[in-house]
Length: 254
Length: 338
Image (cartoon, rainbow over all chains, first blue to last red; front, side):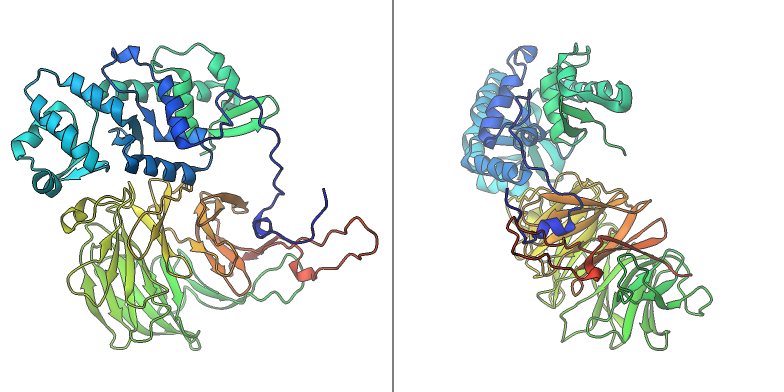
């Protein structure tokens, strides 16, 4: 390799020379290069449908997409495009303002219709799915938008909140929500804590990824170890260090 | 360079490295020490040179005052008193038609003080909690950005009486007047604000450990993702952007290190390790292309870009060129005086 004499701007601030990217090792879960859409499609396969008796649409998290698509800005922009095209819905999961759930629109629509079948609020929900969902791709809805643009009355909005399709955000604004997602969120929060605990209890607070996946999942982890590991890596709750034996997950020092 | 400490002392340093050694210490030229009659009683939060020359500087402190100093005599020329502790102040670097200093205090109102008349000329209302950071745009002399603990960042035109121009919304939702109250820029307190050097973009940092880049003309979140930017400061965080590099960098205090990111791509270049305790502030000097950072370990460090020596090519005919010894090392330190 010819040694070039010109100085690259990033190198003047870098204290170490960047190592060249070697061939991507066949590591489980890591090194996937692809688009956000492919990542979401792969992640919804990991979602355990049977656990919720198929009543919930398969939910992937934004942090999981970051672990599969290494450049976060590109991932965010692609997810935004998919949202604008109407292919996916992004939903605010209640436990953390930063955690967004990603659901394919078709899955969402079918599950919500099935969930509200035969209930008194079915009419309002169907009207919502037919008129509001295709038109407005945002995470949240405002009072004037619902009443003036889409013609919803206050009792109908109350029915939507009762159905679990809307969650209150502020006076006069609501988040889009998934009906019945409470169980999922409970399992998710407990599972995340349990997997982090597995890393925390390891010697030196670090674990090889292959070893973590090979262990038996504790009882609190209902959604699967792979699902949680993607989320932990993407949310930067563990640091990923690449070693000669594979990827190492280490808890950050703070 | 002007620096203010948590003991109320203000020190001026001479940054020129005339020793030609790679490791050098910057000498303090003068200081407003504890025995000065007008010294601040509590921690000095923000100091700023007068934008047009070094004859004057302003400092604001937790003792609820903003003081205007004459550099040559080191006396206070004017003092502005407020009802609450002052977190941050800023004077517009490009203003020619006004001499307003924007002051962010523990109260929810942003005060604008006029240096010419010596009084607070007006108040900007709109935030609900303490104002942690204020910054004028380097592009338009009347545009001001304020960041508050109520998770909101507002852009104001100070000539306009009716309220803020835009409240930044991290989700880029629909724009309408009625929804402004629900828009949040971060999911926690917004600690720091910095415009890019051309004024077209605004960077904000919040206690939700995120840094966001906004388009300052329409308030849109550009969705550049820098990852987790640890931020547990309970007051304002002063971070800075480079000026004059081919791809601009942002330098953010990250625990006891300084993280360097490329602004428009979000990639983390490096973490500058050198301090022993948490870094509170950093500032970039574009003439020398140097970064200075202050930390709780009572040190101010100067970070000088290291220029590598030219490496000889494979053929023997070219000669190795010598680099100026002043540019040789990448790390220098300077100690705070007195």
